[in-house]
Length: 423
Ligand SMILES: [Zn+2]
Image 1 (cartoon, rainbow, N blue to C red):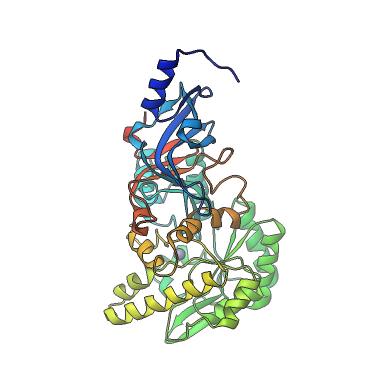
Image 2: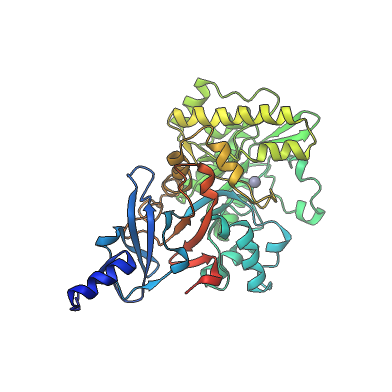
């Protein structure tokens, strides 16, 4: 390392001004100061901290007085907040018209759509749990090339449904779109669909295991089809996501060795997760995405009474609390893109009824990184990790709703929100 010589008073003044030490920073690096830094949910927070970013990675993070700062660029609009690792939303969809025709839509329009749904809320990685794969791959590529400001996208692409099992809530889709939904009738058909989806760039397989057909009837994916689809996905080192709908669907998911349930379960008083089910889920290393805010949202859309919504929400909160307490993995996710209300504040408030602030932070950072086998690359604010950061206005340990008070979002060292202040 090369040191430049400064007079002692100059170094002292620089350290005061920057809140970081006067040792020379690497070429093309950026310095961010933090009143408080959460390195990870497990580590004690560091006050008066600084983070040095270089080459899309974190070069150093810790007490500001130990971070080489001299010569680094600054993100002054982001300085002095509460810094945490970039968030993953593990359940989103790029199915709204604003994301369609991604190959020809002006970059500014797509960026505005990303801002509303994701960038402004601190998401630096998202899992698209079902969409038109070809369109989502174009979105992913345009973000990767820097044309569109957005998170890193992991996508399940086209989902698989039970034979004759399109859910009743999707029947209003345009007929040409409905015709593209995969409903394999055999193991061979399922394998062909899974292979085509993964070959075309999907990062996971999504299975609808149990789907409502109206009038209290359900369609079920045959267990041999579900298992074959999951095995093929695992053979490639990729995860399997499942939409369970109800407890029967969770049991099918465990049998098929599914990795992630994209919702908890809601409905008809049959939803209590007993100790035996929770132990089976935990033993199967199944992660759960609560999507708690979706419960009152759906009850409201169905014009069901407020009391019913509150009761169903309380049931799902209890599932999440019990599963977490048993050692089950929880991943933050909201189903935005399907849900058009993008504000995550209520999700954090509801999660706080089941989880501590640091457990919520884990569901946003370290838990999804581990689930995607990327803990060595992201999830913590530490040297060598991707420069994915969120700067919050206030400490989420005081109030988990503060996870929604995002001042800045940084993805791979680039400011994705707000870009107007980018220096
Ligand atoms: Zn969804």
